[in-house]
Length: 305
Image 1 (cartoon, rainbow, N blue to C red):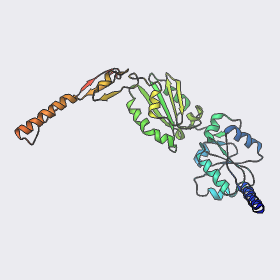
Image 2: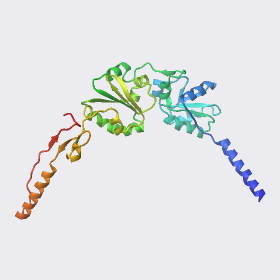
Image 3: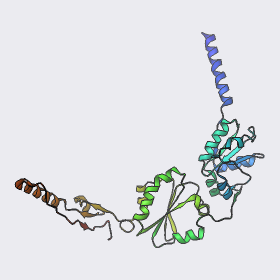
Image 4: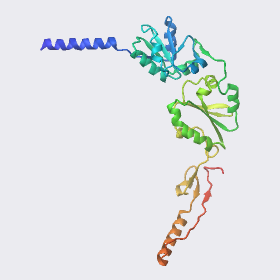
């Protein structure tokens, strides 16, 4: 019995030891840790896995561009030294995370991924300067400042086509642009098409919603934001956003902020239907009378018009 137990323990130890030796994982580091590790590494292999166009607009110094989405990604990274540390990054960390896992699969022994990508890197202002194009991409900071200096409240939404939370917010953001236009200016900026202002504002993630009043930022949210949460952020009723209901139910006039409503005269409608029905039965009519009721708008505190 003892010999079998000893054999089992020895076998288990051997399995664990072997797994520990062969198991490799990607080290995802914050901007500070990534920069320190990069600086401490002699001749680091630094790979920007974004597209060539993104790379030409800005990249970390001494990085080489190997596009993760290109068909020759594997053949290009196979030319690198698998025994030396390799550092990868992308826009916000999604593509580089996939690339890093692939590098481990290919046998690279030490792989570092930049958490938050070059957006966080640029926003942090690290001493290892990023190489940037002097070209203004999209709206510049002066134009942006003029835009947010408005008599109306201004809501700015920065998004990207590849950003899943941005896509989830897009339908209601687009709708609110029309609904709020009389009292609030809501503008959406594609971060990839407006890199100059993204860098100026030091945005390090997406989506971002910023509210301005008289050119001064009063509120900012980074990450997914529901329509309900946005409406809670100092959007005043009825000054900024009017609310009108239908049906004129009794409770609408007794709320703290009484709700304007379209009265469709349901009681009158019911009386007319009942009268017509009785007439049809009495006179054996197959076609009822057509009656048009004109709805009435009842204005209360929830609207100013």
